[in-house]
Length: 393
Image (tube, rainbow, N blue to C red):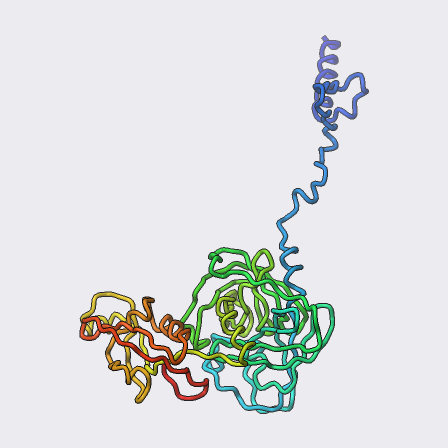
């Protein structure tokens, strides 16, 4: 009986070791390795789990390093020396929710250096940035990603879209960025923001496109923003917003913030707008836009009810400039603009953009509703006055 119990205990121990610690047993007592089938690799011992060849690459976390590497050389830091100046007159400077880059509005003070960002758009030295980055600057210097510094001059600027074009002379073969197509971008697409936040040096942050076609924010006269949650901060202004291939989708221009820091709501000017403005500035030094001389207003539910209209898109004419193109063509206060040159008008922002693209001194057909009846008028387009003067659309 004692012998039987001892044998049972020994067998139980051997079974336990064979299952849990086979390496503790002599080779003859351990379980024989399974013979692999011809052409099949033998399975490694259980104590050394198999590691797939080049698992570091195959299982690597998705990286946007290639996209960043393509775009980074084309993004520059911008340093501006400004003489003392008074607080700038911009509607956002009094609004704590919106903060322009690179910082707060300036009061009278000694000359200082401010920081911003820019994007090289041609190999012969054209650099794109925001108008507010170089506004009132006496001297402008750009710092390339390779550490090279160079003086830059202003080719032209457009405050109504907050864009400016600089030129770095006597430098050829610069790394120009490739333009992407924001019209094919979708909400949820990954984007990278590249710039010089807080002057710490070139920085890349990642996020997604949160919204497209943002308008009526009161930031610029002409608005069509890409909204992103990529972290952008003071100093990123004028920098690049690029897609996952490193192609330029927009120019970072503003953030929505109560503190001046990033809260995940940033706005970039899309390259569709950038190209139109940039090409005109490079060709002529300024931007020419169409103008008819009216004061538009969005159709609200109250106005629709007051005018007894069915729910619809359009822009109501709340004022007509005396002697302007619209008055000469017979436009009246209360007319509702619904179509310009065959293009439907959705709201006042859409109206501003459509009319701005019309060539001055050309006649264009406008379609209105007057007393609920359609009226077509031919208006000879004027040239939009320069910013700063009292103007209506």
